[in-house]
Image 1 (cartoon, rainbow, N blue to C red):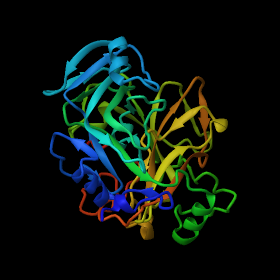
Image 2: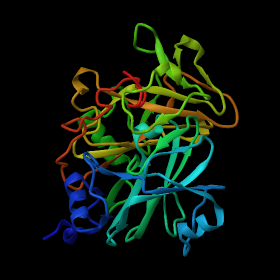
Image 3: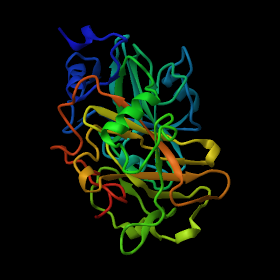
Image 4: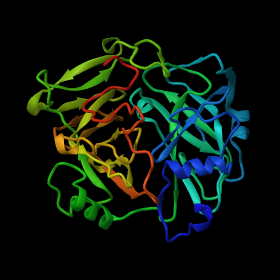
Length: 372
């Protein structure tokens, strides 16, 4: 009997790699192109860009009863072939059909997020489906194509057919896991290496920003250079950091003033870990504490930080942008929350285990495209 035949709403959580593989075998996740190496992750599957991109006048959601193609017909400006590579210009909006499509049964739904490397390049990427009323959400039982909306915010990027900018996490059953789960999980696994009480754990486990630095140089982050060169998203360990980023040293008690429109790479004060039977997602802390956005790429896979937890753990890299007005960010200020969810079955793949994971044991780290 397939696991799909056993699922009901009493079972809830994210699907691990081996069950994602079954969805591929059963044509629930569809693709006419063979799956690439390491495309299936411990709790998600990478999504690949298709053959063409449309430059459009504006971002959009189709709404019920409408298709993405309907909107492209109204808003499209020009069509680009991606096969040999094409440049997506900064501050422009593009729609790209993905190589993967879905034919979900009624008991499965999905959520998308940019990949870590995409978020760290400030490439704003969201998933759209036909009939969508929300970005990045795939409704129970959806059957149809998937599209990526892509808008590079700081660097223009070179992409091609097969480039992976986003990932899809498939879920069943319960939609939101409450504070009780997070309190219990923190007691048993110490999810972050700081003392928290039950009142701190609300809508997830809080994460704060480190503005003191832990290296001898006192490096606390990087600010993107807005008029830097082009980045090929498929090149790894290739670009010189100083061509694209300005390092920032700590200013002790002065904090960091975020300039509107600037993009920063910072790091969490806490070390975090994701137990092997759980997945997590970083969400914004609260707009009431400041008009800034943190962590565009929110998925954390099972096993992240666990191997290193005894020796200091892995920190969460934060992609930060302020809106409207300058904002003073203080050391230790809470900027996000990690929401955990169980896996419906122990994953056969775990982050960092035979996957050549780019960010295991990370501290402050830029995307994989830059030289170590």
